[in-house]
Length: 94
Image 1 (cartoon, one colour):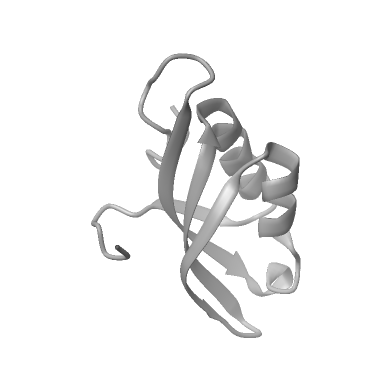
Image 2 (image 1 turned 180 degrees about the vertical axis):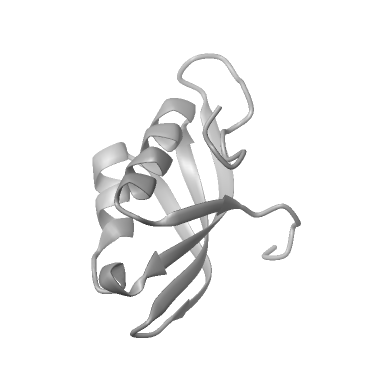
């Protein structure tokens, strides 16, 4: 399981999943196109549901759709770059 409980529910290999996450960017990453690279590198579809970004911090509520394994690798990739990734517990963006 990935840290922070952001792992998609277990399904058959290769099945599609959807996760809802909060991404928090430190100031050094605010201008980086990380969501673009996440989508292209891991073949994920994203839907930004809410965002607040300024020079100091970026906070994004996002849905990611894709293969379970791709989502897990994408989350790990974001964390390696310094993005805080947290699951959205409540259904606050629907």
